[in-house]
Length: 342
Image (tube, rainbow, N blue to C red; front, side, top):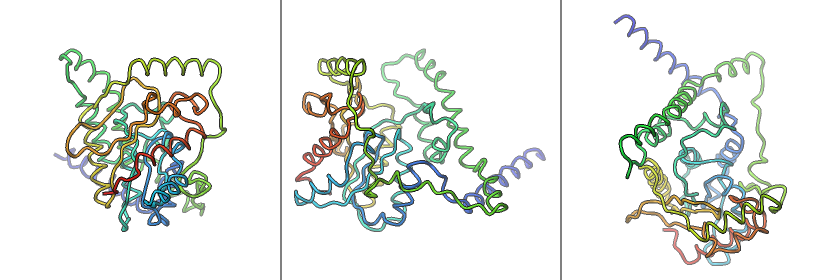
């Protein structure tokens, strides 16, 4: 009993200290994320429309053009690009929560890049603050559910056991990230040094908020594919035209994540619109068909949107270039004309 009591005292002291550090420290300096949230904390009420997703959103949907075209169509908007390179669920849900937490004015739209929960940690981001900051209890629980309760349809017990075994390292890694985030591991020393040395908090600057302060940054340098890269893309495109992407609903946790985002957006008076960017792929994640399913704009269709897949409008198989971004934004507006925000 004495040992258990000591463990409980240590745990309580650890989390109390972590809470104190968290209350005294500024938000973690996460590239792209922190500047956008800092800007929205002061100017967020100016915007009624947001775009949420990865680089396929951040570099490909142009707020100024979207707003101009929507105004011409009699549906004026003021939009902000909340996209972040490499962002997937449930990180995007956390970011959306932070962007809307103090909001008072109603939203019109939130365009959400349609992705399932990504379980593996990007090797390039491993051991960075980018992998840590969003690992609160809610998001870590969502990833844990995706790991432990994957879509087991048409799988026998042997295959299920093998999949569980393969996913245990991911569970361990996400658990450590949650612990590191919850306990503010390493930030206490930074806080103490700041006080002793009287250091000022380093700002990441406003570059990632974009030159027009609308969250958009175009792909630089503007380029088109050539050589081997172009040949590979043309092969992938031909295969996609011959065999359209297979629809998948992924694990239940991914569907719950979509539903939660939809409820959060509707709570703030807005409408959720799912966007599937123009890219070559063999599978296409979609919400399950039901009465509460949000509107889906699927641009991963080279037969329907051939101009978005022309090589001269492409950066690579997953991204359009600067010219393609303008075409992509125009296509989104074309789909939205005449639709009510409710």
